[in-house]
Length: 506
Image (cartoon, rainbow, N blue to C red; front, side, top):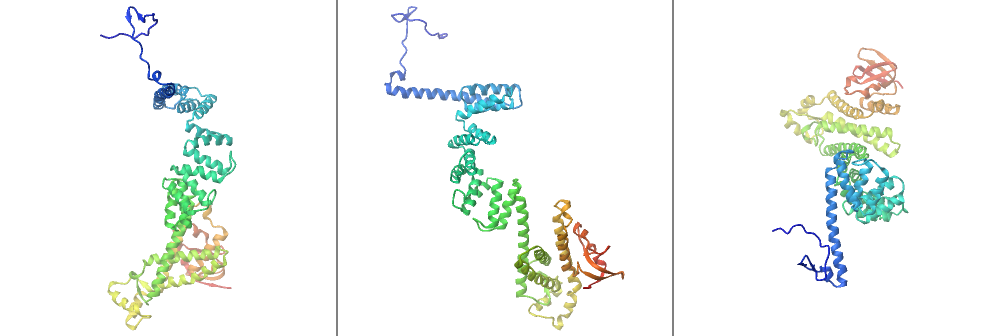
């Protein structure tokens, strides 16, 4: 049989009976049985349990509110979510108080009310909710109330919030809201970095890089840059690239630097694209130098009157391209640099490169299979013996050598023009100094006295005199070949291919 509904007693007589039924005396609780000193402990434990039960209920309210909230204004779901948040917030739930702030701020489930929003924002922070403390620090920093911002950052930082820690570090670094103190900046930044926060790790690397708040230590800077870079922080990836490029804190490695610059550029770092472009040019130049120096070493050991291209350390076309690229580079150094030592070094290199170019185009060829044994015998000779004269006539051709050199030069020029097409259209038209530089480079390659008074005979027997100049349209061509090199004397334009002879008159 069921006992029915329990109703609490309303009265009690002297013999402790009611309606003629005996009453059962309530057993004393554990707290009541305990000694006075233990009562306080037991009472506290009971209170903690009740608070925990209450907390679970509040957490459930908040979780359900977050589940149904849509953040789309006054939808039924947003209204119900706000009711959940508000009930928990009134009971002192820190996260719920922050959610009530956000609801009032955005008008989700309740009418927008900035004053009430800020009231709940502060309540959440004052309740000890670390996210609200940090965000309130950001709010006051954004509104230039730096001393209050520092107070809230510190409260969150002391609870172990990594973002608040490095934010407080920045306040100490900049002297905002506190007296500037790099040591304190490093202290708080390190706390966040050791928790694995990528921004803090990058910032700590900067402190070591600059020697601010700590002794300058490039190795330690690289350590922290790398930790942040490996987490995908673009700024740290760029900084690590700089370290590899300069060799500070790590052995210099331009290829590794380029890899980190590339990752940083893909990640959106604003400095990385220009760093990558500059370094790519350096790497290309270094690669061309290695090809040319390997050819120089090869010739020092073996320089026959006729050579087999298959024996070269690199393909003949690659060596030609490298020689022409270096010639252009040193020519630009001579024209653009104000450093006498650099100019002197470039001036010495150009004749050597011209010699290598002549040697390569004239003496090294693709040898037919039936001639390979005979050509191999020439490897130890300095000139052609009588039996090898047919080989000389067959392979050595000055006109063909000149064509090869010109083709390599045109290829290098075309690469330069294509790279220029990524610039704004207005920059494609050379300034006067750039035009002069281009003219001098062409003069060296084509053997033409550009910029000087000349007498010219064309193949159609037309004679002209005047100052020979390069038509600036050459620099705007999308592709280049010898026939399209246009020259100018006065108002008359003509192609390089039409030129019969050209003699300086001064």
